[in-house]
Image 1 (spheres, rainbow over the protein chains, first blue to last red):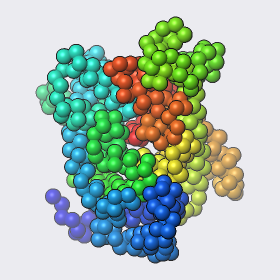
Image 2: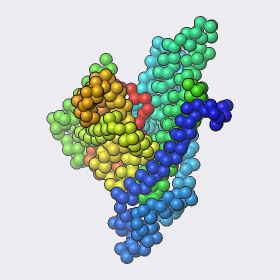
Image 3: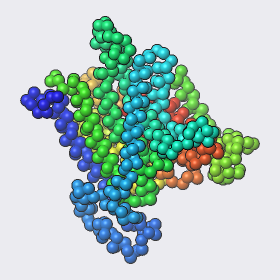
Image 4: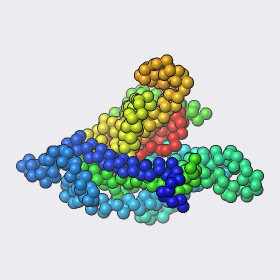
Length: 319
Length: 260
């Protein structure tokens, strides 16, 4: 490993540190944007409760004072930031349960789904990306290539519904075993992993094919590196860093992917919580979830940058 | 060959959707058959769970879906290329401010940004259109800025600058006309993403009244009858997928999927 700070620190390292600092600011700006977007345009949540007949007119003043909506906007904003730093995301309008508790309750469902989906993403993008490069010119490669295209383009709502249909029809006719965990976990994770792997596989594919035309690949071939995987590795290694960056990016987008898959497969989790809270007008929950997603997204991007820095020696050199 | 197929599908679908009254005389909103009726006389594709004719719902729903995606795509491309052009020709400080603002918005995933807007304005088709359009602006801005900057480095632009042309004139007379083909590719690709995003948001129930036909909403309501009548969900799903694939083949292969 390179020492973090020395006089010969490369420009890329300084760049990386700058980006990490910037991501803190970006996260702050995203959080503030969320707060103002919801507060300014959605107006007064107390009025929403009133319009839905969930509160009596005479309770509104008390409710507003309780929620802090009678304060000036700037005051509310500062209080929101202060609470956020203490890990307090407010409470649900309807159940009065703390938002953090509600989120933590649903978090394990989404984490399990996302973790398994990431595993599928890794597997599928390796198979799709490497396979089509390894069997270049054969029918198998063409098949894998078009699968990659399908993974990129086909919307999750259709792939998910299709899988659901195939599986339901399969279990009814007895071809497939009827298992709760298959329907509730394996299928949604597979759908999510498939649709996330498309972009990564595509980057791997084009990177490897490009490297195969590079002089160092020809040199490795001339040196007598065994064909098959050892030779492929020479073309694969330089193609990895951009794929890793994209993997980090896609990983941070997984949360939004779970919104759709959780809905299709009727699975509990943060995504469903978000859709429900928005349809029901429970703003504190929606706000908490968006804030959480923005934080996760910003920092996993930064982590991806750091990982690319470790993986790619070119970023570490002085030139 | 692929492009010909893609264009053929798009034109055929557009024609079918526009000629809907000629192809079917069924009302897409009123029940005219028993619930989940199988394909038969008068109902070439059968009826949905409320007994409404599936073919006419597909055709009239296609109008809505395509129109929603087109407006959302237009918002994204117009807003994005305006801001991108501004960033490309503006002084350095303004450029960095715009880029940073774009990065902040990109750090809220598109679907969440869209859902924020839905939470603010309530569920309706216009909210879905606005949400899909606005949430795509940061990305189109970034792409447009990059390709306009590339154009701005061409020699004829430098020549124009050297003879003292104003920034506005350079942007309007030199950069935009020459970047137009590449902006068109951006627009087609963006249309594909807008289509994914508007149908997904409708699928999630953000487009308001589910009785008005629209492909995303139809896919969602058909999902409950997958075993009894799979065509209710699969046909709108296939229509959505074919359209997106066709648009992708006409545009360019995207590297990072912005789908939600």
